[in-house]
Image (cartoon, rainbow, N blue to C red; front, side):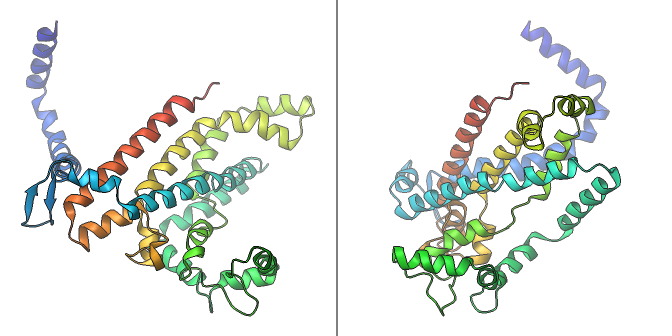
Length: 318
C-alpha cells in the first residue's frame, strides 16, 4: 500500500515536474533561512562555540548551565509577569472592537477601522523611541499625566504607608533607571493597550454574528453588558484564543522593547532582563553563541509546551 502510494506520488511529480519548478525557489529559501538556522542552533547548543572559529563539543553542559543560571532564572520570572500582564492588556482591544462593531452606521465602522490600520505603517522602532521619551523623568509625559490626574499623589500616599521610597514628593520617579520601577514601566508601555491587529481580528469574529441574534436579544430585553457576556464574547472566543497564543509566543521570544528602552544589560541590576535579550547578549556581546543556542532551545521548548496547553485546555465549543 505504501509502495503503491509512493509510486503514485512519483508519477504525479514526473507528470507535473514543470509546475514543481515554480515551487522550488520558495522551498530552497525556506530551507536556507528557516530550517538551516534551526538545525544550526540545535547542533551548536552542544558545543562551546564563540560564533566563529572556536568550537568544542561539551554535550549537555550548556543546558546544565542554563538550569543553574540565576540571571536566566530571573529573566523567566520577568517574562512570566509580562505574560500575565499582557492577558489583562487584551481586554481593551476586545472592548474597543465591540464598541466599533455596535456602531449603527457602517460608514463610522469603516472610518474607525481605517484609523486603527493607519498606525501600522509607522515603524515599530519609532513607537519604542516615543515611549522611551514618555518615560523620561524630567521631560516625559508619563510623570506629568500622573501629576495632573492626581495618581502621583495617590502613589506617594501609598508609598508613605509601604515605605518603598520610590514615589517621594518633589522628586520625579525615574521609571527606566530605578530597578523596582522597570517591570511596572514595561507593563505600562503601550497604554491604553489597544492592539491594532487584535482589534481587527476581533472585528472579523464579531462581523460573523448574524443580525437575527441581536434582534432576538433585544426582544428578550437583554442589556448591553449581558449582550456582550452571553453573545459576543462566547462567539469570539476562537479569536481570543488565537490572540492569546500569539501574545504568549511574541512575549516569550521578543526582546526589542527591553533592548531599546534599557539597553543590552536589561537596565540597572538587570531588572528588566528577559530570556530573549539574555540570549542576544550571550551570542553577540559575550560571544557565547553555543550557550545562546541552548537558551534559544529552552525558550522554544517553553513556547511549545504553552502552545500545547493552549490547544488542549482552551477549547471553544459553539
